[in-house]
Length: 341
Image 1: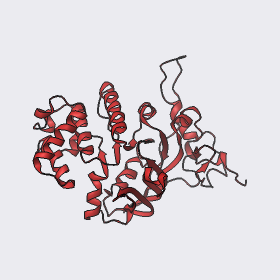
Image 2 (image 1 turned 180 degrees about the vertical axis):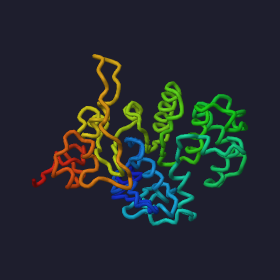
Image 3 (image 1 turned 90 degrees about the vertical axis):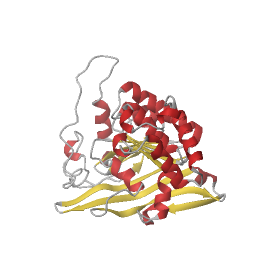
Image 4 (image 1 turned 120 degrees about the horizontal axis):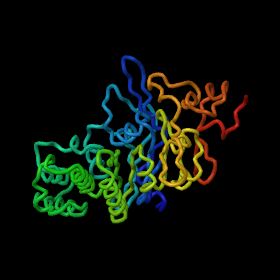
């Protein structure tokens, strides 16, 4: 058995998810590649509309079809079954079939941006966590309730024996977010997808949730995909970072590499637009222009209309590949590859 593959949890290759609408085709995810191993965190960053959430919703097979469709690529889930390595090709599964429903929650847990949309207001927190456990585990309701209480305790919710019988609207935003993390982890998944889980909470609660996720990751050897547009958050939690723009990964690498040596003009512009606490007070430099319409992605490099380094006649004509410039640091920019003028 390949020991390296037993550490692999998810592998995404050339993933393309398009939406076929009356006004045109939206290439929401257009050739994305990455993998995540046990105990590691991949941070995916980028502006709103760049394809971050569609990428993870495709992994969970939560894309509405029609109009959405996986056009190309593969999503491989690695798991051990009877001490043998099993590789499940998620893109070939029926989104509404039993095997995919078993994977959601059991193999892959997900924490959404706003817990009030994930929890039903008609049932208690406990009812919903217990239902998730009973769906995937062969245990009785009493054991499921005990496990739900234990996970509520693990995520730092006070008096879990009482909180388990409260309704979502009776909890604060931070407590609801913790309860959703408890539900996502209650069946011991190998992969946790966190889709901007700290956006709707204040900075203090945000820090607590990040600490909690890192603590649970260490305890459970979790692989995490963390979606955010907050660079401070991703610097805290990620091991690897993927920078997305208009459906493509434009830069990928270790966190330290991305933050110390950003290469793609878009990544450089993102970092330059962040206010700094230390040093000389300087005027922020915004990224020029707006994100183009998803219906009319520019020819050539999709970032060239906003790029101050764009070369007319090259960048607006030639589409760059994602190339490795060393140490696993990859960039999609014509500056770093040989192009005939």
